Amino acid sequence: MRFETVSLSDVVATTAWDDYVSRHPRATPCHLSAWLWAIHATYSFEPLLYTVKDDGDALQGVFPLFRIRGAFTGVRVVSLPFSDYGGPLCNDQIVEEELVRHVRGECQNGIRYLEIRGGLARPGDLLPYNYYKRHVMDLRAGIGALQNKIDKKTIQYSIRKAEKAGVVIKQDNTRAGLEAFYRLNNLTRRKHGVPSQPHAFFENLYSRMIAAKMGFILVAEHDSTVAAASLFLTVARQIHYKYNASDPALLKKLSPNHLLTWHVILWGVENGYQSLDFGRTSPDNQGLIRYKNMWGMEDQDIPYYYYPRVKGAVATKESGISYRLATSMWRHLPLPVMEFSSSILYKHLG
Image (cartoon, rainbow, N blue to C red; front, side, top):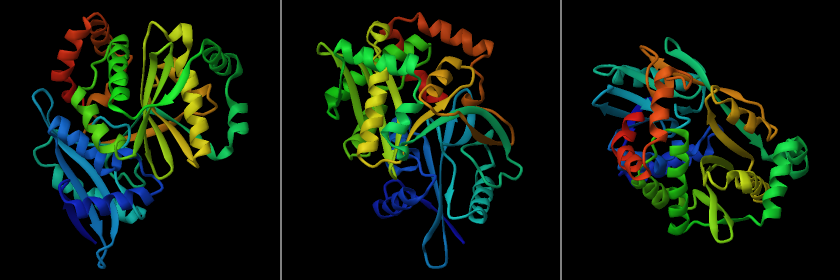
């Protein structure tokens, strides 16, 4: 086996990387070079993109990471920042074990910790942290079977409510659709008391993924007003529900998110997609866990791994006093102040 690193500016190497990712059964959009480029271009983190090849120069595995230098957190290596999932994709367990061992040996000097967000077949002496949950819907079951699993009292009722109210779902992959999503994203993040992603990040995501048809934006409109919007990413016949945003003033009245989610399920089945990944959820957020379960899915563990200690933003439980104090303060900031503060602070949450 031969270990190499790839530059994001190397078109030939990143094309081969993406071809490998797109064929891998555990691929996620976060493993694609376009997502990695958006992270690098927005936050200036140093990409560490490792590959392993056999004697015939064929890829046997890829492992994307970033070296992050923070004023408060020191130097750390993460796979992957601002991503639910990361970690290596390999042909088999032996290759994965060798690649992880190689990366750990190269990265451990001068860093506070290594963090891998994803399952490992053979984690060795890496420390597991099983905290977050994920929900994945198998779209191959078909519309009838999926609808039968959906909660009738809340979800199906809310879908009908939105339809009767005149909510219309549209795919809008224009910059107008992006701006509508961004406006609602800021409102939603302030409601939940957390910083919002910088505008530049979504611009980079739009130019590299949405415009390249690796994702799409759905908007829920009512009387020419966008009440909700969601950004989805796709890879290997999978849809990933990456971001959802809505107008808090219209949620109760219109229930736009329920109809929007049902629309993407219908669209995914009709277009031959195999799964819809609802992403990561903190178990402290019982309301969101319950909401996702009502769509007929069961929560699954997302194992993360650390070396030499469990550390980092994702290791901070949302039930902790420091987290609750921070979110309470953030909810009361004026929107312009929140946007400005987010542009400074958000990169340190990777």
